[in-house]
Every structure is written in C-alpha cells, then in structure tokens.
Image (cartoon, rainbow, N blue to C red; front, side):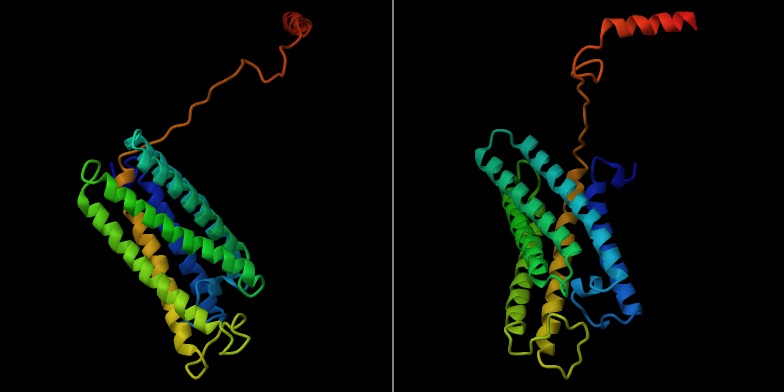
Length: 266
C-alpha cells in the first residue's frame, strides 16, 4: 500500500498539489501571454486577465472545497482523540471556524479579480491569509497540548517553525503593502500589472510579492504536516432510511392491488 492510500492522507496531499498547480498554470499562462512580468508578480495578478483568470478561479474553487474537507477531517480527528478535554475541544472548534472562513476567503479571491473588485478582493485575501494564519496558530497550540501523549514533540516543533515562517512573511507583506498603497507612489497601482525597476515603489512591490509567495508556501508546508496524521484516520458515511418508500404517506392499498392484478394479467 502506497503512503497516500493509507487513511485520508490523500486529502492534504491533493490540496497542496492542486493549489500549487493552480498557481503554476496561471503563472505560466500569464507569462506566455505577456499579461504580467516574470519576476515575482502578485499571485492574484496571474489570475486577473482572461483566459488565465478562468483557470485560476475554477481551480481555486476546487482547492477551497479540498481545504474544507481537510480542515473538517482534522477537526474530527482532534475531537476523537480528546473527547473529554474541554480546553482542546474549544480550541478545536475555534480552529474549525477560522479554517472555514479562510476557505471562504480563498473562494472570494478566486472569483473577484483585483482590478475589477479591489475592495472585495482584498477582503477575501484578508480572510484567506489572516484567518488561515490564525488557524495554523491554533493547530500549533493543539499540537503542543497533545504532545507527547498523542504524537511526538517533533510534530509540534515543525508546525511552530512553519507558523513563525508564516508570521514573518505576513508582517513583511502587510508592512510593505501598506506603504505601497498609501498613495505616495501613484494612484494606478491597483491596476498596474507591469513593473520596471525605474518605477517608484518597485522595491516595495518586489518585497510584498516575495512575502506573499513565501506566505503561500508556508501554508503548503503546514498542510503537508497533516499527511502522517491523516494516515491514522478514515471517515465513512452511513445511510439511515426513515422508511421503505419515498412517499410522504403510505401508498394507497388500491394502487397496490391494481399493480398486482395488472402484473397477473400480463
């Protein structure tokens, strides 16, 4: 049995691979059509102009669904491992809410392009990165509280390092983007897809985009730490019938008799 066939480990793997593919395909398409510059464009800029925006939106919507499934499975796993720990249960529920908000933000980012709906797009990005960062922080706290009883200390330390990586990237991106969009570097920055080294704010732009890509990679790294945990869990769906038919009330006996007579005649 291959590693991705054990339990539900394919979920975080599929999430990371699919989301990375969305970024890569959109980037290659945008570069090929000269819609953005090759040197570190915003992730959203690679999905702003048709046809890559169609690919970007469709693939990120599927990624949001995969992310919801991954976050829910993680919630159920932590709950099953700690059924009587009230503090862990509360943190686990908080993590579920934060994770779902981040998934909703990802879908908003995918469907509302920066150049067309800037405010909505920014709100989606704040939900995606902001709530996603808090989700990782909560999960790291849960990992700390569950070690060494549930899993080893190395899992906690790996996730802590990834969260620190995410935090540094988020702080850098927030600081530089705030300076860049403060109005001191022109009013057309929102619509700008091509940058030259001579442009005002070019350095801040490059730092911001590098931090955005770095933060995205930290998300990938964090979800990859779920693979080993998800090898130890599986979920199933049970169908519970509330009746033997789909009628609101029991069928009329006359209809049953007619059916039997007709069958006998035939």
